[in-house]
Length: 277
Image (cartoon, rainbow, N blue to C red; front, side, top):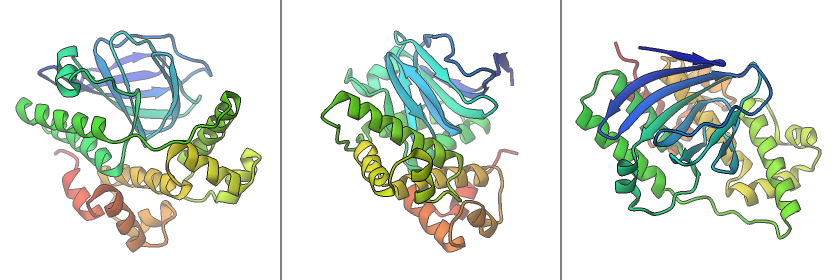
């Protein structure tokens, strides 16, 4: 596959079809700054496979991690700020204007949408099928189903603070907690996270749920499930060892959590996401 490298960015085409293309994007930042604004050719939906970084999409700033996909249109400038030395890997799904209109029927779409475990499986399965040279008709149907399901996923219920300054401070606190948990979801405890962020565990738990619609436990489990998917897709076979690495109580705890998020057991996911020969 051809690769395009610029400022630590590698773009590898995976597949293309009628009105869409799929690429793997890997970025290793060399400086702590926002990238130069770019405008995508079409509607670009970014799934974070590994890592955490900030993105600006059409004037909206968000923290991107494996639990959130973000979408930008052809008229919306995008820029990103990655952590220096860290490698972030994403799957970029680029869609034409007509493709997107057919899916949304012109309904406005929020720039960030939650990625549940089952949607993470669907996006990884699309990439896996594309790498196995699935025909264009199948890939188009898988893409349409994935994007349709993603855009139909309800946004988490959030309770905004009354004052703009308070709301901004709360978003900063929650984003900092997300970054810590994404970096180390297996060993960090709630009290340690709160201490690092200079607040009480109760305050952090309350604000986190208010801002994201999720408990800290639910978010931590979702991050761990995404990491489990990575390991399973890469061929990890020792599930007891994987459970220990990710901080689960045991193999059974890992299996219950993965099945609850993804709708499949780790063994079933291994068969679905097996690397192409």
